Image (cartoon, rainbow, N blue to C red):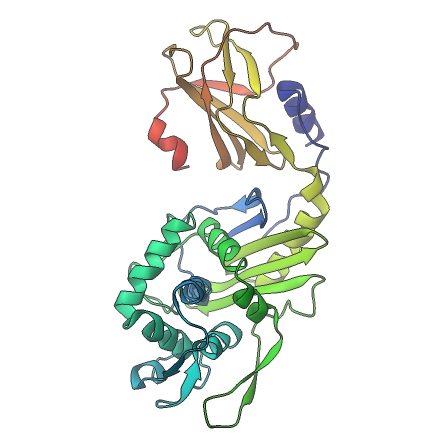
Length: 363
């Protein structure tokens, strides 16, 4: 790791302090850790693979509801909503709640009945609400997500990825109402004209992990044990996602611990940083600066270069930071003027392979 950090500092000439924390080992099949403010990825494991999300779906349901619904408006719980199977907020058909309280029952108790009531209140029907879910997913950058229901019960064509869930959580946690609910350990759910009853949050990190302030649990047979976890210390907020986990809380702790120990040691490779002279035998004296910034903890750097010399300003290749062969942060390289080779050795590998420009945004 120390050598990799030194290599990046030599290569780009502008790097932050070296990261010291050891990479966490996860029992979960997929996981990711991001900085909530910048969105930069600090760690990823199989984070771009489609998976069933279980009740973490409800973060997107909540996001659509607070953006498109009226929190103080009162809605009657339908028989359809009250009869949904699985985790429940114990809503009764005919009871009336504000949209705010339906959100509390959904996010605190993970009520599938409450999620369906939210969908009907905001979208009219579950299918109509699902259209809004998918439109909103695209808007927040969750392009590998497709939902067909508001609660996350297993269904065909209902999927997301760890990266997409982190993007959804990042957007949801910007909403004060969502942030308030998911950070609460206990609230009172009160239907109109009836006594209230206490409900407790299903997220066991709250009150147990320093700085924990959300976000959502989820469990089904298909999805396994899932968790989206947020924690804030000082001015740093991190979001961890683990999917299909054996020890979801332990994995989330390991990710958050890693992030808080390591976040100040992340490297920023700014836009325009040059790779110097790439000598692959076919593109002599080519200087290839990054066309977009890459911000990531130190990992393995790989560069792919096109065999055809492009015109100045054209895409010549792609640089990616990887872990275990999986790209975590990607930026295109563009042709620039030749520069003198001022460092002794280029320490990354070069693959002279054609570059698919479309793939630069899909990795």
